[in-house]
Image 1 (cartoon, rainbow, N blue to C red):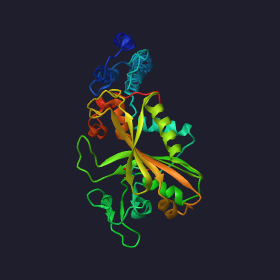
Image 2: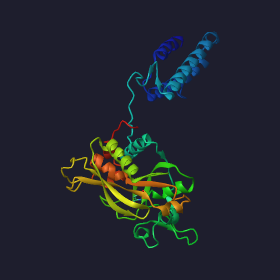
Image 3: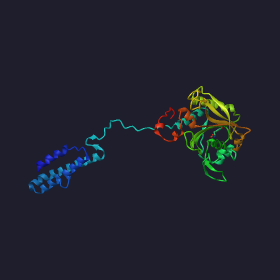
Image 4: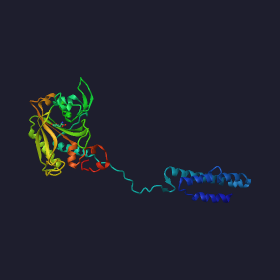
Length: 344
Ligand code: DAH
């Protein structure tokens, strides 16, 4: 019996399981109900009292050795570490995970903001759910103006007392909120999402993004507006980009204009993007109508101002030659990954 124990002891001492299954086989062999230790104890009962005195302690120690060996490997497997060595090679480089990238519209919005910040413009925001007053009435839209029509506007609630509630159709509503809440000077740009009830296609979407600009103070003139926008375009599209202003109409500005830039893609030679005209319209602008100033509690005899509004999608399309507006909202990583910028 002593001999057997010595032999099993050396077997246990060199035992190195490579898997949980091997460890389990070890447990059954030595510690199981029909295992070696059980057999040894049975045999122990049959030996002489003389041998009992000698073997008792040895047998108990042998049992303890088997139990401890099993327990320590069990713990190692549970903590994911194998006998004496790490299960994983910790010196291997980690598996990298993919980083995201900025959305092209965010990049361009940021670029626009940075340019105007240099000119001292603040950034302001307003709600996307607007009432009739801020989106239309205060901005001098006549009652029957087609822009109020169901075709264009997503109405949310009919409210005879406070005016209908709708998703804002433009960021010009933020101008009103800003002017209502203070007195000139105001010099701010207002980026945000706007909504229009349009069928979705390559050229139109039911939501898009605008940046509104407003400058109101004493003696602000159309010349100031032109110079500011000229500077903006040189910064955005590069020195030498030409601009032209065409007379236009908006209810909230008088006079009103639309501004074109020389096509940044064909440099004026004519291409698909500029419909072979060499020019691309990028924004609407004008002098804030005195009615709008008065609607917002500002003395139109003392103060004048200019405003402008541009679509971020349009500017982004031109910059990156994107031809389908739907790409901006499809979240296709292959599309989104292409835009890198030094602006984070
Ligand atoms: N709100 C106009 C639109 O959505 C854009 C616009 C035109 C804004 C002229 C202005 C402006 O501030 O002066 O089409």
